[in-house]
Amino acid sequence: MINEKDIIPRIVKGDIKAFSLLVDEYQKLIFHVAKRMIQNDTDVEDVCQDVFIKIYKNIGSFAFKSKLSTWIAQITYSTSIDYLKKNRRNYVEFVADEDIKYEANDQTPLDLLEQKDLSRYLTQIISDLPSPYRIVITLFHLEEFSIQEIIDVTGMPEGTIKNYLFRARKLMKDKIKLYLKNDHARR
Amino acid sequence: MQEDKEKLIQQLLDSSKIQENLSTLADQEDITAYKLLYSGLKEEPEGGLSLSFKSKVFQQIKVEQARANDIKIYVIAGMVILIGFMFMAFLAFSYYHLLLKYADIIVKIVVFIALALISLTVFNAFEQKYLKLER
Image (cartoon, rainbow over all chains, first blue to last red):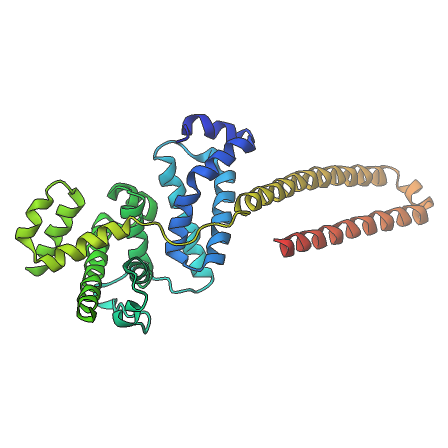
């Protein structure tokens, strides 16, 4: 765990070793957020690179009003959205309940059963979620951000975040339940 | 009604302290599915950044720093040239009769400077394009 108050002034002065420590500390967070938003590995790496360049250029403006991880996640989130908008990938800004079809690919749970791997199935159903759901789920569960921190990162209202969390988890729970049922029937 | 129940289950799982209450709220299939989901959501996505990622970032930072230094140099050079031109304009205005006498030489010098500036700009544009392609 790095000391933010010590490392930031060093980076501002141009200490590359200090920046190297920051890269080590936060590359997982940046990768997780970008990966869940963009999904394609090559594009994810490019976005992560852009994020670190932005951090290096703008770290002097970090005012310690939030955690450094929140600030970094915010940059990653906005960079990923810019990338998706620029490349016209399947980015949706707001997800209404009636918009969710949740059938992004042709694979049925039975097809996926061939993988015999619940973990892979979970990865699949997460990637089928709309991007705002994926980011909220990732920040809350994987990065253990609080609701307030997710508000700071995404700029979404509290009610929307809570609704996305609930909807996403319910959708995924229903899919897993079906998966388990089919798995049981197969055996 | 069902939605409220689901919300309550999720709240209990989020708080993770009072999970014994779960079995009274939902059937076993729901609880198992939710528990699998919650543990699965903590798993990191597959893959990762390449081994050369860090060196690529530092390389890019060096390019950006070089670009920023270049811009500073161009701004300073631009200001020097502008001041130079203003000075020359002042001299030309003050010594108009001499200017007419040496017009040929002055034109040659001006053309030489203009060509040098154009060459420098073209070279810089190509260099920037090449650096972008290398990225």
